[in-house]
Length: 88
Image (cartoon, rainbow, N blue to C red; front, side):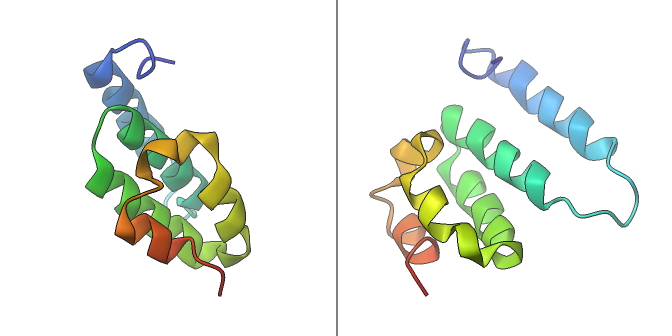
């Protein structure tokens, strides 16, 4: 919500707080997905792609869902996005 409102610093701070609250040794994959959405919204495509790549390494079966998600519409033409979301 903060990122959509143009409050980029606040949105990134919220993601940071969520990450620091994760249990030690726990999976961060679901946080990676949400963080990738925030990164895409604030225009940080490379960071978003890195997070999506990590997420899809853990959940490869959802490549198609990620490929068609409106959350990542701004990334759809990026060659790295096309590559990491391609059917396997």
